[in-house]
Image 1 (cartoon, protein in one colour):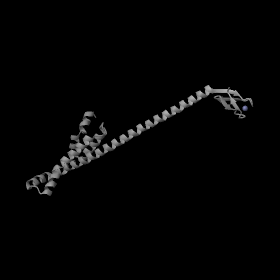
Image 2 (cartoon, protein in one colour; image 1 turned 135 degrees about the vertical axis):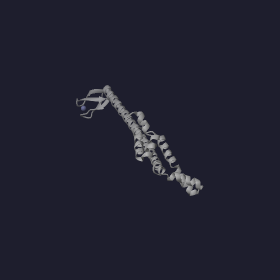
Image 3 (cartoon, protein in one colour; image 1 turned 180 degrees about the vertical axis):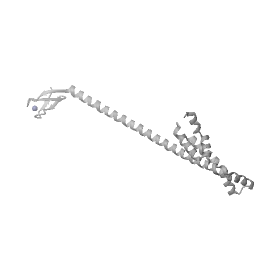
Image 4 (cartoon, helix red, strand yellow; image 1 turned 45 degrees about the horizontal axis):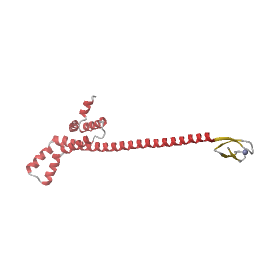
Length: 187
Ligand SMILES: [Zn+2]
């Protein structure tokens, strides 16, 4: 399917026309629009679909209003004519309601999706940050160990114990014989 053709069949006017013919077709096209949309937060599309749905129901609102407020008989009769028209009654009304529901659902889905996406991104960046901190800590610890080992290597001496004659490796100038606890000095 070419992308232009796809773009046309999931455009708002085509969705409205499809819903007018068969509400289910409109629902399917709306789902297709959501799946193929690059930007999942299609707020403008959802809102225009809700508005079109509301507009289609205007004669109905007006008729209810005119009945309630006892408008001029001629106006009332004119509106009644439109509202009671079979096509308006069967197709336009259903289409209007379907569009409103579709628009609201897709709006909610886009908001939820957006929230989930943001949360997922935050989670991911948090994990990366924690990992970096951990790496830095490990590196610091390793550096410390290397320095400690270097220090020991540079400052260790083999000293023969004057008391028991054992060879001891001591770090620094003084130490204790590992065999007889005799104090040792490298000097
Ligand atoms: Zn000793």
